[in-house]
Amino acid sequence: MIENLKTKDFNKKTKWEGVILTKKAENQIFSLIKESDDFIGIRIQIKKSGCAGFRYNLKRIKNKKKEELIFYFKNFVICIPLIQIDFINKMKIDFVKEGINQVFKFDNAQTKNFCGCGESFELIL
Image 1 (cartoon, rainbow, N blue to C red):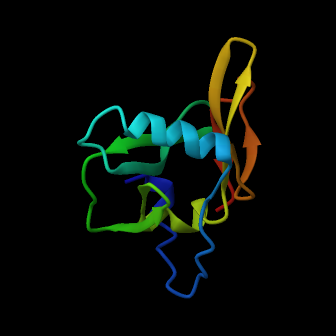
Image 2 (cartoon, rainbow, N blue to C red):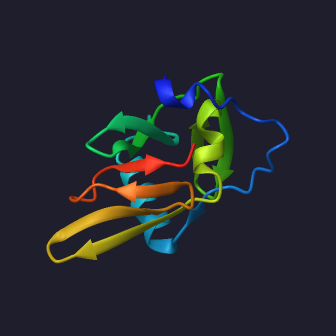
């Protein structure tokens, strides 16, 4: 659990508006999941990391955990830890090609400052 996120518990009054995936992000996630019959979807998490404090983590998953919001997005499952719902709500995920690199891009109003390399961010707590 991320220490800084412990202070803000999941608020059951918060209206969950979901995560927005562009078509490119959806296709990329689906292609990563279908690499193995064992994968059922992805987990979206915020991890403590980098010089600005946090980074996003997308991980292929084989099962769901009890303390997660679980929803189905077309061909796969998306799981989000309940304690992080407020920080991921309404986030947009895109998959873009930049030169020879291909990366997931996250657009989230809950972030405020980014590190110089763009790998980590600070959250509005």
